Length: 238
Image 1 (cartoon, rainbow, N blue to C red):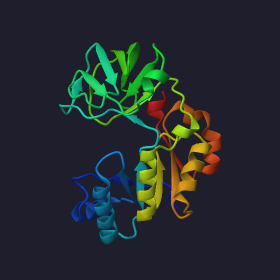
Image 2 (tube, rainbow, N blue to C red):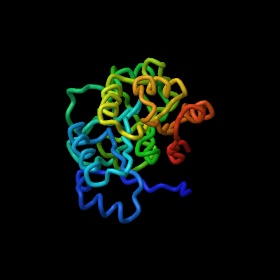
Image 3 (tube, rainbow, N blue to C red):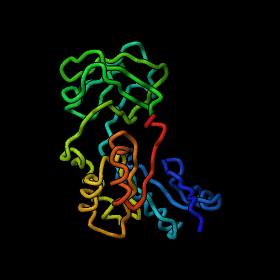
Image 4 (spheres, rainbow, N blue to C red):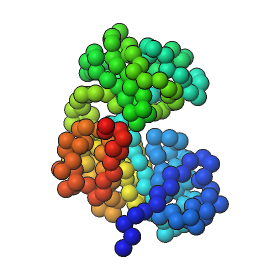
C-alpha cells in the first residue's frame, strides 16, 4: 500500500480539463480546493469539472476554521515598516492599516504579545491599543499580501467561537456537494472536531484535522483519537 499521496490545489489557472489531465499524468492522487479563496460558485463549477474529467479522484475541501485573516489591500504586496496597525474597521481602505476579520481581537489580546503572519515568516509585537486598532512593531522584514492567516500568541477562543456562521456556510456546501474530505484549518480540540462532525452528519465525508497552532498541539492526543486524518504545519508551530 502506498501511504504517500500527491495532492494538487486548484486555482483559477488550473481548474480546467487540460491541467487536471496533466496533474493526473504526473501522479496526482487527490484534488484540493481552498475555501479561503474564490467564491462558492467558482468551487461548485470546479468540482463539477473534476468529477466530469477525473471522477475517480477524491476531493478535499479546506474550510477556514477559526483562522484569523488579513483583508484586502490597495496593492498586491505591502512592504513592512517599523510600525504596523491592524484594524477591524471594515470601512477603512488604504495601505497604512491592515484589516483583520476578528472583531473582538483588540479586547482579547494583550500588549507585548506577538503576532505571526505568512506561516511565521513575519512577526509583529503589539505595543499599543487604540479602540479596535492594534499598533504593532515589526520584528522582521519582508512583504505581506492580502488574505493571509494570522496567529496571535496566547489568544484563547471559547468553544462557541470554534464554528462560526461562516464555517457553517462552508460545511453546508461540503454536505451539498458530497465532498470526500473536509479539511478543518486550525483544529483546536476534539470538541472542535465533534462540532464539525455533528454538522456534517455524514460518515462518508472524512475529517482532516489540520494542526497549525499551539492549542492544537496541546490537544493532539485527543484530536488523533477522533479525527479521520491529521496534517501538521510544523513551520508555523516553531
